[in-house]
Image (cartoon, rainbow, N blue to C red; front, side, top):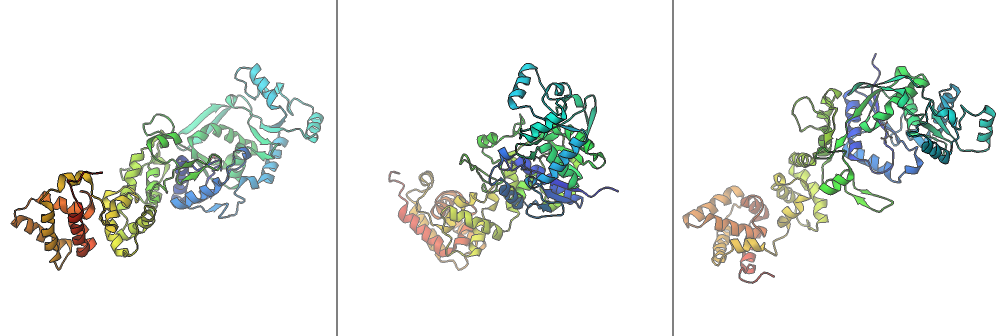
Length: 513
Ligand code: GLU
């Protein structure tokens, strides 16, 4: 019987979660949900030197924002806890001892200076079967000496004893069988007495086993560790229940030349982190998708397609649709170009799916931040106003400039539009238009537009001259949505007032200062 699907996302809290890490979390989540499985969040904080305060909260907040739900984890709890590695020291200690007792690992006392000397003496030095016999470890020292050094409090590490001459087979669901010779592996450090903590390799393997992980889905950068992991499962006697591996292809720079980095984001103007990050050490702030105005649904959809496709060319998919279609059969093995322009397109597309009322809700905080006072405007007014601009924006914050005129009458008029659109005859023309509009009972676009069009025609006026000057007076520049949609929303009184203000205030002959 196939075992239950249990996957884990296992970030190290060493800084903000990179967008590539988010994609890894997403593929784990999609795979888990598709297969009725469990999604674990395990915090791999065994490298005390690289610990960054705030990183764990950042990870939780990012996943929550994106709608990637965790079934078992530090916050959620679960039957296999604790889910934070620094709280599992006893478990690792026991497993390190098991390997030592079974002769699959050994204790090494070499100091950093001794290791440097060995590297200097032997080109391409590697701690392995060819060199371990010359080093200071429990394979070369008498047992009493080893005990004495430990009792004296000498620092040591435990190394895995890699047997040479073996073919190590990594079975990867995307890549098939990858075989490497055990001779190229070094005797990796599994445990350090200095901080009484295991290294990534040991903790990762032990936890995947104890947490009954069925599939290890992670970035390609971990592929080189996989042969060692295979050997560790074997050494512990767990080979039969070892998880399947999936090493996801890298995210590449937008031009495809090399791995995506934070610098590409800075250079080309897109975030590489889900949320804004304030580096506690440098004080530096890095932009995030959330603060840059992306909708989480758009980010998810965009990331899902970086390395996977549904088997056809469907692009716009909700989380539920992604779950129902996801499988590794349609994952690519080569790196995915980070086409950030496509990310903007997704955001635009998801904004179109929002109702005007939903968009208005998102607009409120953005408007406030941009100093637009919405007091006195009804929800309905705001919704209608932003609704006219929906198709023109990629980001909610694009609305703040584009929608401002709905809430503030223009006080200045774009000089180049004034120059082009406001002639000596315009004030008189606009006054006639104001009178015409004042006389209307029904000010809806459907009613007002034909009246104004007839008036232009029957008076043989120039359509462009009238409408552009009208727009300049109402909006402050010759841009924006359909004119009669605008006037319907702002209403007759305000429209007429803006016309008369413009007549009073626009003086094209005065030099612009
Ligand atoms: N702690 C590792 C990381 O930071 C986990 C790698 C893995 O998934 O095995 O990505």
